[in-house]
Length: 157
Image 1 (cartoon, rainbow, N blue to C red):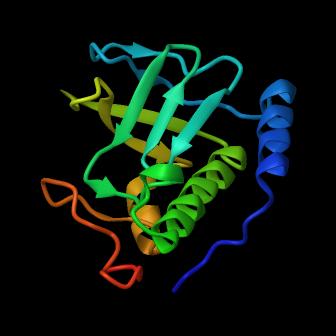
Image 2 (spheres, helix red, strand yellow; image 1 turned 90 degrees about the vertical axis):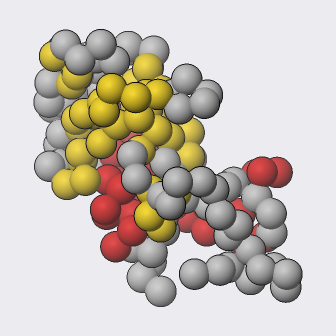
């Protein structure tokens, strides 16, 4: 299974804060939920909620990545293997965004049950969902949530 080098969660936050505070993240224009183009977050602050959910703190918009599903984290995970894989996906997204030169959200015009804006997210011009699938940290969305764990607590393909 492909794995990304991961840094400790605290170090990721420090890196993200330092890059944003130094102004080294040049965020590309983003689309608002209404479809109008606007500038990206001036502080460069994008909060990673989990592997497939991000929040643009400056615009107060929560994005759900289109067409992928990542494992759950915390008490929402059905087994320890799902939790570990979900945490790996979350950390990979944090690492990618912390190192990014550009970030762009392209809303589809839809929202999900929780009110999140369904969007394609591009990090340095690459689709974040496709990147996560290539790293085997996500799978394609199949119209509904499927279990990540089998009866023995192992990850399902």
